[in-house]
Length: 391
Image (cartoon, rainbow, N blue to C red; front, top):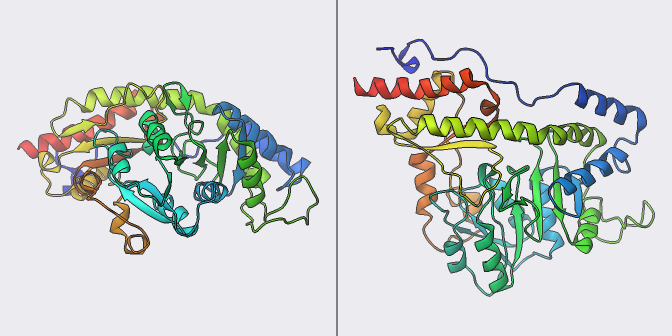
């Protein structure tokens, strides 16, 4: 029996998985063009073209480039008028920015539980949390799997709420053929270096509402009226602009996205089939309504005891020691004191707590860009740990 690497044995894998972020001559050419043509920020044709191309790809009329996904959420909330006294419903299992974007407007995040089959927001839990102060709901398309947008939109229409999609991880994802970012009032995407489209940093807001698009464009450009002069500041705003170089890189990344997402999806299907045969691993299912999952993360639910460990963190450490990148994922938002003191959690978030403490193990998207031999190493690592637990 092979010894576990965590105990001093030889790891299953010693070579790296495909490099991320990925780039080639297309990014280089786009950057050189931006460098030579100028301007390097506001007014760059690279930014305008990227906004148009990204919005069109995601079935929306308008795209407003900005400096990060966090900013995209914040500006979207500001554009729809969210402020002090308002409440915004968000899922417990998401990145901090979903909450801090709300807090930064002066509004109160209302944290609700998640669906155990997707780890996305639980519409039933969201409805129970609605009050007279509720103005908006933010479904997060976790890992690139769209939330139940039928239920979210029904809920929003029933209670007169705005929907802001947190699509930071959902580039190219679809719910019943509708692209992520096209189904809410507005949406925010991220281009942080780990994302399926990466520019180091960056974000974009999508919307079909022309007035909101114009307002958002003003807010990210220091409150300027873009139809008037450079110093025509007509409202309080911020400098949250994207640079021409980021937009240049992202134009190339967008062209490559369909091919790479298809490869991720194929790899995820293979891993799901193989890992499901190992006692103690339950790959997250893809809902039938999800016509395209972007697999920013490949998430499996694990039972650490089946692998001989008392905690999920011990299992994560052992998998990493075998040369397979993975991590333990998010903590529930209400577990952070600096968020809890400025938010509300009206009901227990037991599903999110279970995902965080016991179940969820994340494998990053670049692993899915490997070949079959690379994916087989992932399977072998879990098999090795399972066999070691049986001896």
